[in-house]
Image (cartoon, rainbow, N blue to C red; front, side, top):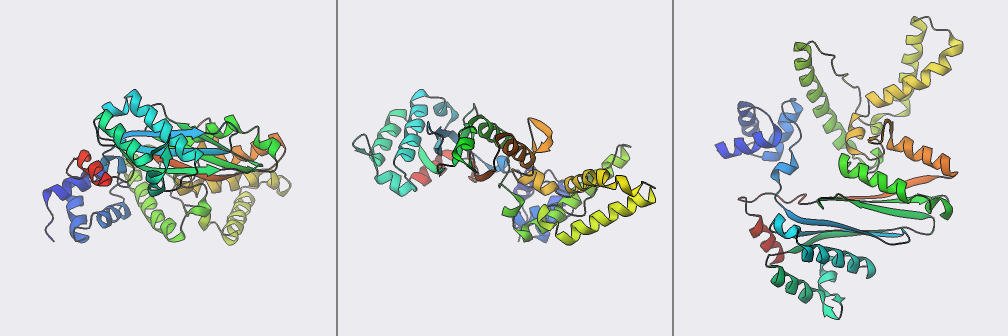
Length: 354
């Protein structure tokens, strides 16, 4: 397959790798863009393809949480221009649509279109809004999460309306659930900023972790070449990337290695139990970099960067006197997954509507 200059340019923009490296990767991948990204990453020559560079979308993400904190809904409604996204009528439309979805338990775009809002078929109502506003609009996606008597939900939408998050928790009792509002909203704000993909390392696929681990090591080794040249401290090259890889056998060996190290250092055995927990925590931190990037519970909390979200949730559980578990997590970023097609987003929205 012929590798065009445009293909090289696109790969270079999305990965930050050099032009010749991009050309070689595309040739090796026979023009397959995603495969070429993987090849570059495995050689430590490019970051993960930057989705934001491939997206073209305007509109708003909207979040509505019920007054009893038991139901939360998030929607993404696309427009052609950011000018319309700032329009009060469009903002009212997104709020009304989100509340309509929540109040009527709507779960699909098809169900939404055929539902009734204020005695009018939603599809007709929406078309009248398009005619008034003067731009193509589309309800692209939405999701609702619910909690039972012993649970709570919270939501947050960033001030620019481009990112929204929902989080749901299951608690030991309803009293604890009733005290979680601000805490869960703060976790939503963290997730909006830090972009975790899933709740826990348990939600990651083992093959995915192995593949990402190869890319992670290559990335750190490549960074170390520059750090060494500059005379700066080098990155630790981890043995593992996720707690998914830290089996009982791995942790037993880590503990044995720490004990052997303490013995060599001449530390008295009677104080080992005071030293080992801290070193085990360090081992976890060094060998769960992927969790810190991709999982909500594995990330260090933006409001207290010495603790992971998992630790913060455990502390909150202790404070309130009962178990708290994060069970639902949804994050929408405007335009996520919509790829540029000839830089013509208006046509893309029109295609979705048609």
